[in-house]
Each structure stands twice: as C-alpha cells, then as structure tokens.
Image (tube, rainbow, N blue to C red; front, side):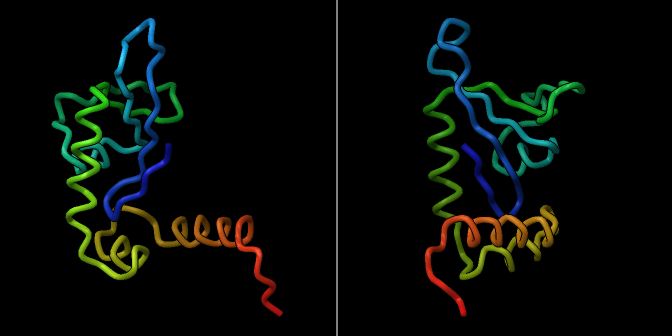
Length: 111
C-alpha cells in the first residue's frame, strides 16, 4: 500500500508470515518520512541497496493507530497545497502522481 501524507511518502507491506506473523514493514526513501508520522529515529533500519532504504518493522495494530492519528489531524482542503507548505514532498512529483491517476482512472472525456 502506498500512503502519502503532507510530510511523507510511504510503502507498507506485510512481512512473510513465517518470518514475522502480523508484522508490517513501513518503508520510505527518507528517514524523516518515517519519523514525521510517529516512529522514533532509533526504530528506523537502513538498507543502502534497497529501493526504499529506510524501514520500520512493527505491528499491524501500531500502524492502524498511526494511520488513525494521521487522519484525525487532517486540517486542509487541498492535499497538494498542504504538502507544498511542508516542503517534504516535491510539488512536481505530487502533480505527476495526480495527473497519472487522472489519466488512468478518470473516464470522463474532456474535450
């Protein structure tokens, strides 16, 4: 699952059940994206050779709580504008993601 907040871009996946039952790996390309959503710096694991270099392994319940907290803090009417204010995510990247979603999913014809 990809999650975008005004302060972070995250990828959340489940670890193989044999390795860690009910454990999730929250991944990011910047360590500060993990700390911005509530993880402590000493929880962040660094892997130089991975596409998401920074990660935290934690419980599903904890990720649920963090996501509920993030949702409860929404105080904006436009996500891209709020993200631009924080400076954590490049505006062009967010626009490109928005445009790709529009192009790929919007069935209306704009002529």
